[in-house]
Length: 372
Ligand code: SAH
Ligand code: SF4
Image 1 (spheres, rainbow, N blue to C red):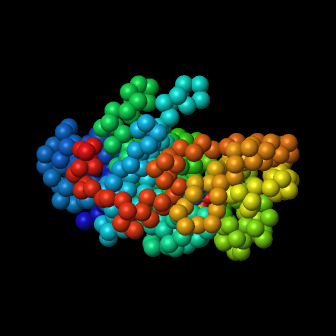
Image 2 (tube, rainbow, N blue to C red):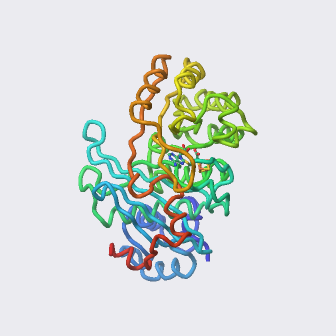
Image 3 (cartoon, rainbow, N blue to C red):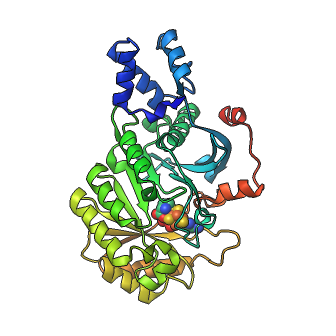
């Protein structure tokens, strides 16, 4: 059986026409699938029973099942562990911000594109285990839909959010641009008005610097936000922290990001994880400022989220603040990311690593769905 989410809205319309149904049934079906809490074709109450049966006979409703949910931040952060059909595990995090900037609330899902990651950044839980496999487009889409449905069922954020997921960030497990086909297809689905319908400004793809794929995303991605994981402004150090730098060094990555800005008109965000005594010194802040000034760029400093067994520590709050001020003094906008989800191990890949090590109990799908 094919996953239903492997179909684009145009393919859904063609399938419905083939099934001898009027065109409005396709729009109903798409609304049920992408924008309702329904957890099966059977539950799509306004569709004729015969059509629901045909759908169930031909398509898998979801390619993954939740096996664990952790809560933190007074229930405002939920971390989902999903099991894929072949038994692999993946993570997605949902962060609810009730009073984000001047009262507009937002709900952000952090999603995965690969099981594991081949880049192997030494401070990242996902990278430590290497790459298991790419996720299919349907799996990338389904993880977000599972979280969206759970949010709608929880009825979170009544008005104005209405329990709807408002933002997506490709910052979970994996390097999105090493799986660029599924990344691009899922971006188009999430931003398609007939599917999830999020504005492109609400979607952010984060990359460790796969230069050729940045160009393709610029041309075909509709102008989503791009985040580049820089972590060091000079090659020697970046070779260590982001091993992909040996293939595409700092200058090429920044040039590709400039190209992204030129094509899309969008400001690029540079991610910089703050590792004590490694990349947080004044001289590097000055290098970073020199590298990015006069570019359409913004720096986001990320406090390091410690991984059991790795050698790094987070920079102190005062060091992070001093670093931020130096970068700003060079004329580059610089902010510090909040540490949402730290208590439930929200850095990518950590929950999966614990599940694989047997230190997290997995609960049956049905118990998770009923909120047990
Ligand atoms: N592979 C992509 C996207 C997933 S990682 C990338 O690297 O950009 C998303 C972000 O989380 C990256 O900026 C990454 O460097 C950061 N990250 C990874 N491990 C972390 C940790 N232990 N603490 C803080 N940030 C981390
Ligand atoms: Fe891969 Fe990103 Fe983790 Fe580096 S930080 S290992 S690129 S997921």
